[in-house]
Length: 468
Image (cartoon, rainbow, N blue to C red; front, side, top):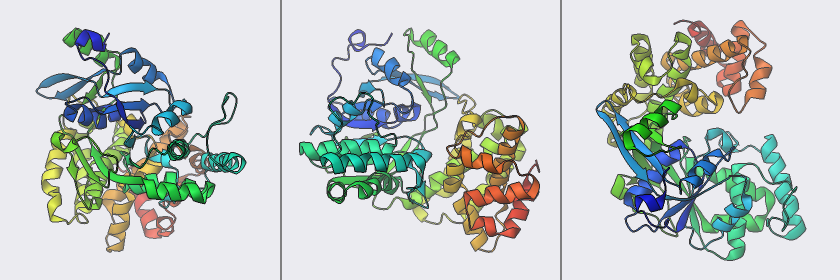
């Protein structure tokens, strides 16, 4: 079992970063970047899980240590990452507030998936049940006691459940402690993800208290980022193989690819690690880097997640070996590239690199993993290209194919009795009783009301359904 004493690592670094969403991607990306540059061990991370405490229990038993396996066709490289100083159950709101209230904490990072921001048309969706419940809870607490402090005995008391409400509760604890400003850094696959985090957190504050909202606006910087490192789910066979190769039992290793990319734009009022020393890029304007990554990498992933599974493929590498899938990717990329014109993007080189990365046969990136939460993902990864193509007078067949495959994927799940693996499953279930063109029209309308009025597009998507 991994432990610091046995490896001679010494005590964990003091916590200066609090992270929400302790998963494999965080550990292959932000935690690795911090580990790579924190030579004086002064930037420890306290990471909180999302829905389940399991990851925290496993990592805590290993002193926060885990093996990062960088996997390429040439072989595996092993590295023990030690930047996570503490791992906590995400339900421990008291501990989260305590850490966020500490003057030593300078940064909050977030990887909670797109759906957890609860946005609609780029703004906090106040009609979403979890958001409405948290607004009611926090507003009532503020009106009763003038702050969001947890009751001394919180046992049995309702607690906020959304990411925005949990962070806002912690920020109020920081306000009361006079601990000063900090940065919130979203690392989720959202365009303008820092703005999205602001909507989820500051937007919620506006519904709770003007005083609190003003404090957040003055003291919290929301940093936009573009993140990129393919990180497939670790399997039991991976765990066994890593133990055999390293001679150390690790219950929570992470598999990733050699490529890594992190672009950031925003202020860090309380400081930050020198992430640029590990290759991070700090820019004034991040929007076009976000679009390149969301459309070309993530958009292609979503296209494959639905179309390729229907052909019987299980991984991205399997899909790329199928000439039909490769043609669909390039057709979609041709459309997306038409709207990625900034000269510093290097789109042809980026596409070439993506093909090499997708074809890495030793990275088993499961299509079923990518396919989760398709409603929110397609709105970010596919629909902007489709809308731009339609506005330019072209039919957008390359991007329309991804929508058609998503509809077929949902319909196949319905036929098999499997509910959609989607945060919007309830709304989707109400539409899946339809069939034929009616289903096509209803699901396009669910994704985008304007596109749902485009009769020619509905005809195109319906024609592309099952055309494989």
